[in-house]
Image 1: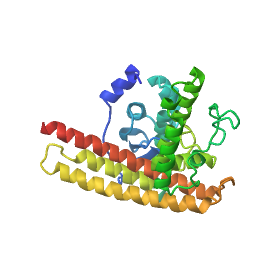
Image 2: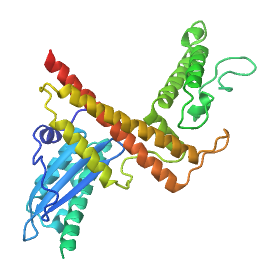
Image 3: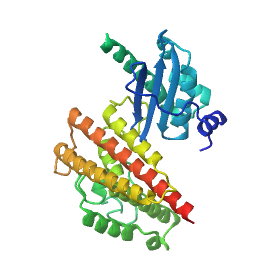
Image 4: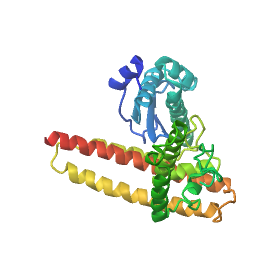
Length: 129
Length: 208
């Protein structure tokens, strides 16, 4: 299958690959998988004292579209508040990368990863009181 | 395959829409496979429908024999492979694994395990002397996981499928959910094995 240029760019030069310390209270981790194809995606955000995402990292083992989707959302996440982050929808990701219908689930994965990371961060903050 | 040939004129007939792959090979609807019986019935069907046998027949009959052979091969590949077999059984139970966008209950602990496995593989220095042994150990471990997955699937499918042929298969929703989960593990482990293959290939390329 021929990949779109923007997908290729994110695939060949993925932004923000890496890990943050998942035990850091300022860090939220989202781990999601696409069981139907065996992909796994880890998305992490660091939230500063103002509640703004200062850093976002990802690690994805999967197809080019899954890597591109997670790379793209890490770029979008930086500088956003948590509520703004939750407004990122898979349709925007799919549109930006011009994903074909069979690859839409990769963008869904990225959206789920954001939700899970934000929920993880909020859970941590709550348990700290 | 009783309907594959006309009972009176013995001429080959078109394939019918939705044949059960297990019934095609006279196998029980089960994850545990009677391998010998499958091989035997596969060979005999192959012989029965082989295009060579229809070489002197009409174009239509030749085409039909090809259709049958194609379907027999597809059924054989599906039943032979544990992952495809599991997904086929699930499909017959009303669950389509490949449906994109269906929301799956995630298993974070397992996903973490997958991520760690992947990271460990990524950390292997393929140019180092011990790389092949390291990959070999990972392979052994993954193969053990695959065996476990398959054993679990056999047990789970056995508790939801009636042994008698002819009766529709039934499965409680909770049980099916369990099967789906193990099926996904199987897929992840298979994918990891492919990644190991790739890494081993990269080593041998470096060696040249």
